[in-house]
Image (cartoon, rainbow, N blue to C red; front, side, top):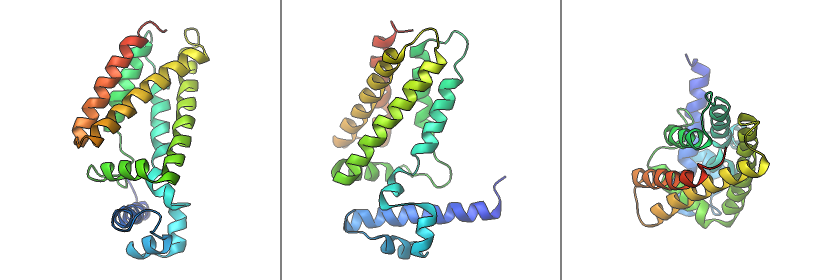
Length: 201
């Protein structure tokens, strides 16, 4: 059971995320200041830094929690589970993951993606995080398949899967698709990719 103090922290974090997204949408990312975000959330700038190190962190705050869930799922590989089956299980699970009560709502996901795709500093941050996460997932796969995959197999599997699903999601949203349609596109792309990975492992 979450205590009163933790619930208060979650509410403050959620208020900062909502204020930041609203201001980014109304004013633009670069034009929005940390002080404005804090004021809109009715906290001090010092409080903002208790939750986020920068404006960019507001948009990428859930990266570590999602990575922890992904590596934990990979490490829970069932006896005899094939690579393609494990990765499909990972994709399906990730569709339902949230970061708790302070996560992004369904309505906010397209806004976050639009900001990441159009703001150069966010694009650079996203690219860095993408490469880092892929390397970490590849290492987790190597550990889960010690006698079946080498580092090239694992890297190829992760790169193919993430590249296909992310591009499918972006393509869907750019065409005006809903979040549900984007998730369907990601799953279809994953299934297409995993057919090609069925020979590995």
